[in-house]
Structures are given as C-alpha cells and as structure tokens.
Length: 255
Image (tube, rainbow, N blue to C red; front, side, top):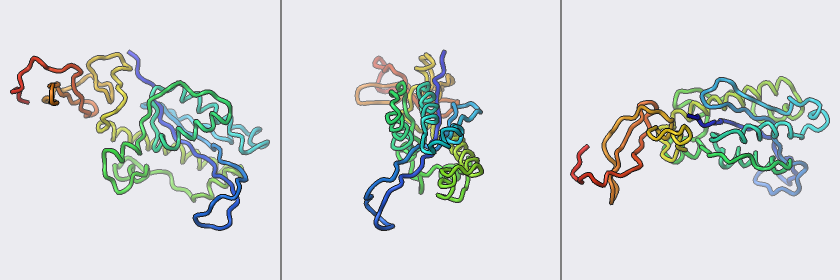
C-alpha cells in the first residue's frame, strides 16, 4: 500500500517595477523589471519538516544578480515533480501558475502531473465566511494566525539583501504552510471532489478523502435509477458511497 505524496506549499514573489504617470489605477507605461520568486516554503502532509528555499540561500548568485531565482525555482520544481497531490491557498490562480511561469522562463519542462486542492476555492465553494483569507480562516477556525510584519517594506528589505528581513520573510512563509495544513484538515471532510486517497493506497474499501478504513454504514443515497450504500468515515468524518448500486434491493429499503 502506497500513501500519496501530498505537498503543501506557499510562495512569495517580488513585485513588478514599472513606470506610471500617477499613483492610483494606472496603466503601465513600461516595465523596468518583471516579478520573480523570492522564496517558497513547503511540507509533506503529516510530516514535521518544513522545506524552504530563498534567494539569500544562493549568496553568490544574489550578489551577482539579485533577481536570479533559478536556484529557488529548480528546488521547487523537484518538489512538485515528486508530488501526487498539491495543496495551496489560491494555488490554482496564483502559486501553481506563478511557479509554471518561472519554470518556463528558465527552460524547465513541466513537472510530472499532480492533482490540486485549492483551499481558497474550497472555502468559496462550500462555505460562506465573511473572509476567505488564510489568516482570517485560521483565526475563525481556532488553528492559528499568519506572522505579522511591517508590510511591503519587508519585501523591499529582502530585495536589498537585508538578512534580518529575510529571516522574518522565511518565518512568515513557513507559518503560512503550517496554517494552510491546519485549515485543510478542517476543510477535508467537506470536500466532495477530493482526490481519492483509497486509489493511491490501492484499497477498495476506504475513505476517499483520507484513506481511512473505518467506515460506518449510514443509510443510502438514492438517485433516479439506483440505490447506493452510504458511508461516513470515522477518522475524518467525510461521506462517501459504494461504487456499485444495489439494483436488486427494493425501493422500500429504509435507513
């Protein structure tokens, strides 16, 4: 039985530098330099170790060209290439696409295919919170907060090589991944389209959301033409149903 490799990750990027005529709602006249990746933090689901890579980890490259993020990008590519499932907050619209943009820029081929779980998408799909920001979700669900910082000045200091700022940035990045995992665990039983963990573990009778084998029969799911046994996982609480219908059972079956 093989557990899927589930990677949680979060990236931090530098801003675009451009010429504009004013301050608010401006069209860019010309770019001075485009964005690049500052750092990332990642961890395998259920593991304690948090992996990070940042521009400051490559001092010779940083001194020569502070915008050269190949080292960071190459390390992130290896992790995504190894993952079966990737979890990020706003990952589908931001983190994964940003990573792909830098992979292509540096001439890297796509990492091996993986499934995605976007906690921002899931939050909007299944719930109606006042805010879907990771910090607000963590606070509301009682699992933690993001690391506070001085704002955009932290990014500017990092871009200039300030080591104290880089330590704060890495700490901030790591906490985002820790918080992401905790929010995901809260969301997990509600995600009806979760990648089927049982298939990765090659177990026929398992919870699709967590792979747990302690399932309790809890009534039936009836469609217009078939009846399916319904189960609730006693490990994570997710609901699932049998893959085979009970066509031979009478429609008068009661829960």
